[in-house]
Length: 246
Image 1 (cartoon, rainbow, N blue to C red):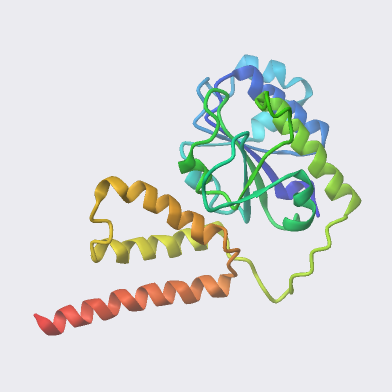
Image 2 (cartoon, rainbow, N blue to C red):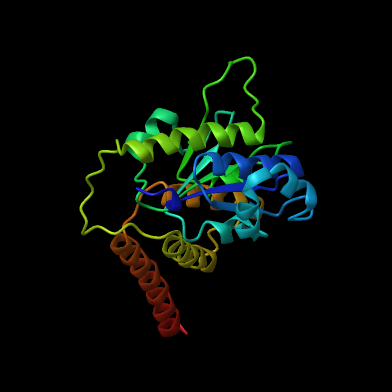
């Protein structure tokens, strides 16, 4: 287990001070990988660097993306933080569950929403789990950097104490986000060809649900290849049938 496997993703952060404070909190617990998605302020800027104090190296090495999808392609586990319970078919976990459900030998990313609106269902659909920090039930809202620091401290203890009893076979290789993304794209392509999304207004919601299904399945690379072959074969069979008819 290594802190180098852990990334912290800030999705559309709005305040320079919070971005800097997040970097500072990461360095407090020996984490280095910061990913920023479509930040509102210019990134980096003097205010971000000033509030990061001794963590300027994290800001300077951070990766910036325009869209969440591009940022998580090479991540094994994406854990979205949310103060709200989502009526979605996605597993909700708490901090203690991180010890038994997450293999920190893999690439793990914690996803944080913007200060104003948090994470939408669209963004949640890219996650394997949602995580809620236990707080006062009548006052759940936490500052962005405070949320990150709580999780960073907890995960740092898990890594340092090496308490995770993870026993998955070494022969089983988990599918990467990119492999799952390519498989989903092939599935969607075939569904488009049979006019599955005939109610266009429902398509975004249906795509969210499809991603939720596949990302939460914890597929191996072999299973992903099999499913990709199935989708490709269905498309080929349909093409040959159409060719014979014509």
